Length: 227
Image (cartoon, rainbow, N blue to C red; front, side, top):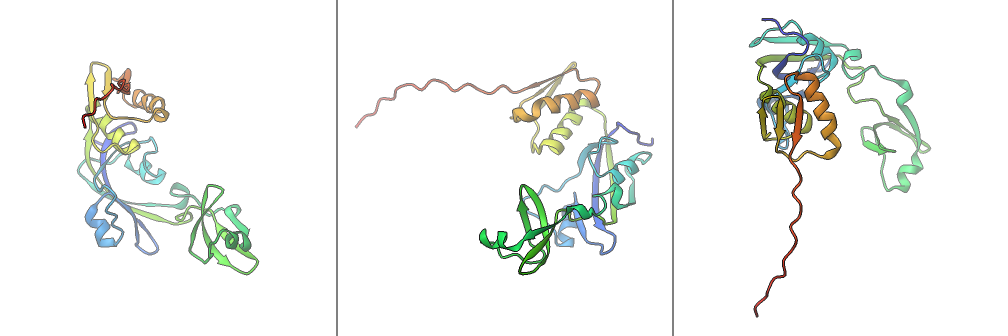
């Protein structure tokens, strides 16, 4: 059966730059190690995504429609459906003295944070430094090799997948009773409403999402100390 928008799937993928074949993202531990990009802090495993919801880059997301479970594919993603085209307006000239005053020795390739914007220094001269605030992969043609590991059908597995993928919850603790889902993991209040709305939108069977209530601190009793 061919997949369609709104389907939940378990996806394994490896993204590479077309021009150099360099791996920039992968869910496969072996692929990461073989490419020399392995990060011991990362969790390498297939991810659960909902097709058509922008969980992955647009070019890959669109290509998932019509594919089949347990099959592997390759798709080429142009810049406009990847990390965007290079925007010359995001190339900024910064007075070199600003870096010197902040005890930073600017050099090409150095990543810097200016006014909460991450950029990469492209060139340095005594008077000015050119900083590129485009995404590092902007303007690049990407190639994704991916496998549809399986289709996710049960509401509880969909919610667990969303918690893992969107909120980085390593071990989701979820119970589904009728049309209510109860989540025992600690979720920051900032994300609760948005997450609940997304769950109810993508999983029509779920009408209500309940989160674990914060435990109130018990009053401290006076302790007797013996000497």
